[in-house]
Length: 247
Length: 283
Image (cartoon, rainbow over all chains, first blue to last red):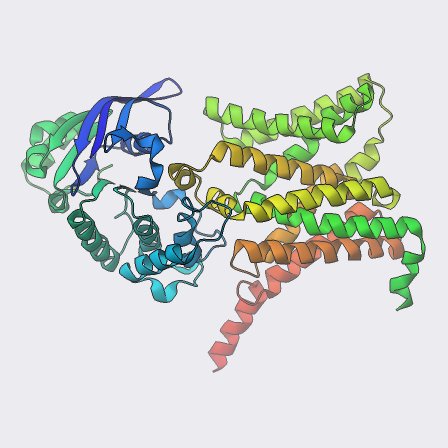
């Protein structure tokens, strides 16, 4: 169970997050939405301890910073240099060293986990390819495999559906389903809109503060949307038009 | 083969060749980290920023290696601090730090009436390498190389995905400090061979030449080291026979290797791509 209480994040005097409180249960798939600059990435980074934050972030009744091995993080695609000289296999292996010392080569057990994860995302055949030679969707799957191999309890995804093909989207959703069944907690920062949001058990609507935190139908009300995105969305929402990528 | 053995008869040439070999081997290995993190300019900044430390150490009478190291590390610390505390972008802070530290160095050299030869500092003086310098270079290089081997995996993670590395709990501040220290030491050692201005070519040139030929960081380091060593040695021979300054000669050989790889690399060469397209067209 992830518990976040009274979380505040400040960047050089600008308040990125204000008094955010939420809790996510095991087996829950939560979507994190909100306009550009709403603090979605900041929330994910604060949970991971990557940015200085005030407040409490606990996982299973202990502070997150003491149990980072129980968290897996899939960064935004734009954060990675895809021309880095590294193969698929080594990307998946790189996060698996924490248990037996970082200077040692990963043992057989770690290699088995990496191999299984790559098979799960249908990338085993391409394991010797440099990551720069893959499509956007395949690259996203490699990072998903890295997160799977970590066998974490909490998985954080920063815009996993951006710039991926249908095949990858299908694999991602299938694996999200499996992870839910295994009792893992998933928090997905997303730019999706419309029907796609129904795939989440719960939506967190953020604009510096947490404006709504409930089932998708209860969150996506006109009032909430207006509060988060501003007045100009009203006509589009009223006529029922599909609003494309939002943030 | 006389041309190959003739220079070895001179002691100063033996020292120069050995120094070239050592610096040529070590510099590209560390230089690879500059390349993959896209901070190659930082190497240039550090190379110029060691000057104030050199001047003070020379004046106060302590080891110039220590002065240079502290000064170089201060410049990286200053860059990191400004980047963290303001919205000024990395390239601008680097450019300003580069110029300011260098200006401070030249000022201190003048004010403190140092007898440091600015010319040999800027362009290197590999032909006057002493056995003590050789030992120092060998030991420093071996230590840096040993640390790269020992911490290869966390360094790979950190340089590829810093946020991911921090998320799994790697001590990234310590890793970054170690990396900066390794880069600074390598630069100071390389400076003796090719000087402040050209040391960046030995760190970056062989690394990006290897980058065009192989697909993994460790292969890039190994091939970069081989290219660096060959370029250094050939540069010294070229300088001996054509009576050219040795630092620039080494840098120009490095550049020639890069151009060859850029044109002819089997996978990414401009000419090879063109030829393979033409061949496909004929078939």
